[in-house]
Length: 147
Image 1 (cartoon, rainbow, N blue to C red):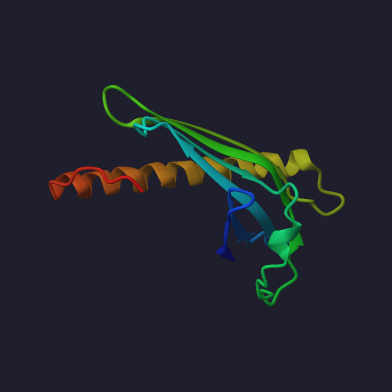
Image 2 (image 1 turned 45 degrees about the horizontal axis):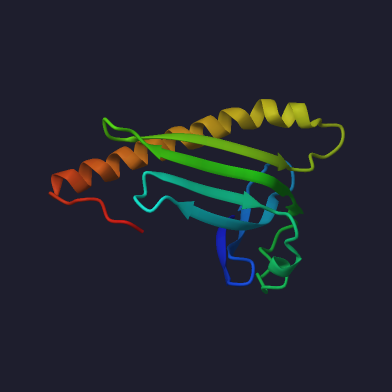
């Protein structure tokens, strides 16, 4: 489980990745997805968008089998929209449209009711990590660096 970088694809102007998720007690899930990035010139507004549409090329990148049966899932459209705030910090809007292919008789609504708490936990951990990195940077007297 985890993320595997599959490369940058100049023709598609996108980056590819394979992401796998533990789904115990069910088979794990794997997503082959495109990622695109965009930013304003001053980096005050940024977008990161993910999609599994037309991803056949990513399957051909030779990712080794994980040694377990993973179900291929889709992230039809996922995005992060980040806007810097005048008082410092940023406002982030996160959106996702995942089809995890739950096994019968489990419904997509049941999966959503479980998964939304995991998504909220993920966002909270991401927020805490960003705050930690900011504190470390400020303690070191550093300015922000653009990626």
